[in-house]
Image (cartoon, rainbow over all chains, first blue to last red; front, side, top):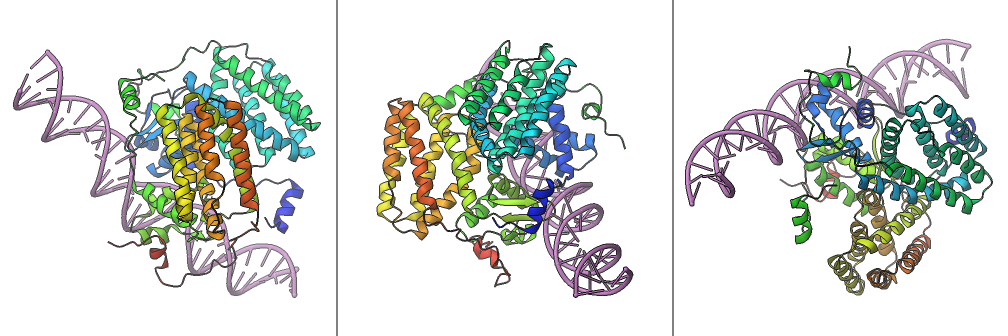
Length: 257
Length: 257
DNA sequence: CGCGGATAGATTGTCGACAATATGACATCT
DNA sequence: AGATGTCATATTGTCGACAATCTATCCGCG
């Protein structure tokens, strides 16, 4: 790992590389949004042609987007049979959280070792913004802040492959949180206080305590999630034909132009 | 996860789903092989057109294959700049093994809980075949058996997302093992005895001991790997033009037909 | 009346051509 | 001479058409 001049500059100015976005990224974003918010129901079959004409792009970027979402686990891709929105079964929740517990332990350990003061203040900032969102009763915003906080922990760990694994979980967790917050309006949980405490424990370099905290935090989140979670939204049966002719257009946020 | 009749049958007969292979899978296999065995050097720029005409396919499957390899971490993909074979820096080894330690602990724990007797005998079989390979001084075969053993542990865990994470590591580990075995001819290490012992500990449902064993096993493997590992094969500089006109053809195992 | 095989339709996989973009060399200006 | 702006070239991103494959329906048969 040779450190170049541009690397040094980038670090000194705390600049982050600009993401080169192509069409498939844009398509993936819209599809992810539709799946996570529930406009696309579990079990629904996503056809390349449908999406491509709804979004006014060719099938290639749609295809690439499907592959991305497949890696994130939001859709299941089977040869010659296209993409199917995966469900939120109790087993899925269990899988995601058992894996997350393993990954996030490593992330916290590394983050403590590698966090700069800027990292810590960014974490503090995110944690501090959650109570407002809770007070405003914004389920979406609350879930977003929650996920972004943990995302920042992973980024602070500076472990590219670990972050890739987290990417496979992130969308699911957001989906879980969002559906729960929407179903259960008093979503203002203890989560944000635990976030704030975790940051301070990390700042104090108390690795043992931080590991125990993240374990308890995730276990609590998992427990709250499965409580009153009786296999909701498994719409595998009613994925019938859409009503309007281009029903997808509105579901994907409008394809004007 | 509703259990269907076909699921039950599949489990009863211990049948595994037949993989639908498409062209991009085939292309990915050849490229992976070329990278892992070192025919494609780190830093080398893989051009879609080059590969596609060397393999006599269009660019689409090559493109998909690049994406797959990108997810496995064997190549780095940057917008409009194609795929570049990644190196084997000491930091990569450290990343892979620190992550692997976390993942495989979970895998072993789950595998102990979920292993059937068929699973265990398959594990015993694989472990028992390693000494032969070592005696025959077959570096390639030895590395393959090693990876396949651990792969089977992950499969036994029956945790799809965990297995996906392992997929991102497997090729790297194979690459590490292979280069080490080739460089260091007395590769016959203690590995296979530890494999055999691990299986028996798992069979005895001694979770605590098994976790300690896998931890020690991986730590040992990591130590053996970085010993005498002075940033080898970082051919970023000498990735000059190829000799023959279609030099890729032979590197990819012959594109006759 | 249930079962197996052929067939039609729909959907994905692959292809080659074109458009968009990044890169590096070159010319120009200070 | 050094830096900056411009342009040609190579390479990837996107597109629409065609081929291969799967699914579901229908028909004949036991």
